[in-house]
Length: 152
Image 1 (cartoon, rainbow, N blue to C red):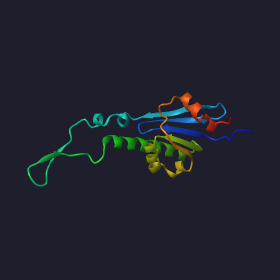
Image 2: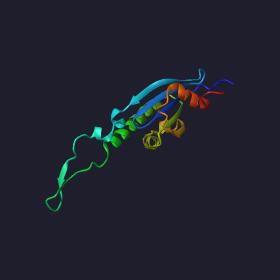
Image 3: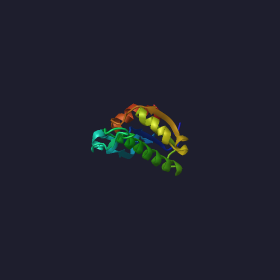
Image 4: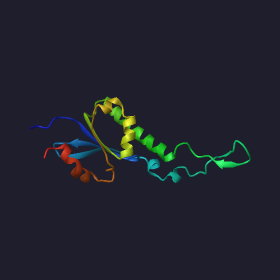
């Protein structure tokens, strides 16, 4: 039985790094299409916001205290990274660069992706899985995930 001629992509991501692969079903391999890293999102929060927080006066009395940021700098960097990936996928979906998308991402990252994904990407998303596989090499990913893409 001949394989369907579809362009299948696999995105493996967490909140600071991502790799995009094309699935070559005939050759039974993954082809690297892109890789992204966000050094800010992967860094320690104290490295990102190294300055001392600003200070403010109490509303009543002579006391002063440090002001806490309303959101963590690392959290903002992670959200920006996921939004950038989602925008990239949306651009590629609108130009029909892929037919199917399989997404395997760290659980929190996957949740954020759901918020940012464009309808054009959602319509092509055929599988999502909440796992962090970003540390695996390409051969390890092929061995672990190959069964779902190429026939036995």
